[in-house]
Image (cartoon, rainbow, N blue to C red; front, top):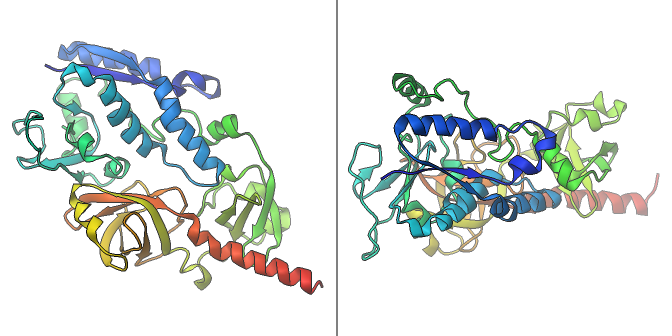
Length: 384
């Protein structure tokens, strides 16, 4: 037996004044698809849970100057978290979603063709492993890196083995009502609301200085740390003084929440930024089935890994050095565009298996903040 569920989340009503949110259109489309398939549809209201478990996290992280990843939290805390709790007594064996990722059990890759293995709580279940989808652009394993083994045990990704183009072809062949709908874009909870507008609605504005990371020179004024992220170039110019704009392009390279300062540089590709763009501390590391053996590695152990610094097709090579069971130091083989504290780094092996992930720490900001403090002391001791 199959039952379809639409998860109604908090933001769809709460921020409707900021822009159009198509949730009513989504529900209507779900009804049409389910009617065609002969599958009942239920709507579960998870607005309060979403506000408590995802929105509060997003706002708190942004307020601290970090770059949150609400989509990762939505998966681990809502879609495979409190939704599981809501249907706990319904005796469903599995939860199937349209994520582009793959899970592997002892029976092999779950591709929708093999016989499903029903959940059996009477014996220990074999581990479930998470793998990237073959479509590198649509792969969503990055957003699933925080799922626990208990959550993965009940997951099915029936289209995860397909390219997006093939899914489109099948939708046309089956004459699905949603076959012409455009791909979803942006963060899962925003709809058509801009992330900047969302942050402004909940955090307002808090003006502060924009300083040159190398000289401490005043470049302009920002409206709030949360409107900027490390590596950002687009949009920073409107906050700069005219004389500074002429010396660009400028990149955001660090933020100081204590003094409400955004640090920028027009030397982002120079040698002085090689280390902060290729080395960082990772915290809150958690391992999935394929990485559980790493829990026993002693501090100082170094292992080469493939990584994703952000969602997208790009994989980067580097190494992880253990400093504790949940922290480590990452060294990338090549510089990254912007290592934003708060964002996730996700680890993979050469077989496309997602091993786990962790959160980029603020510690690689220290270089700029310390340099600025030293410059400030020199200026006070020897004023020109």
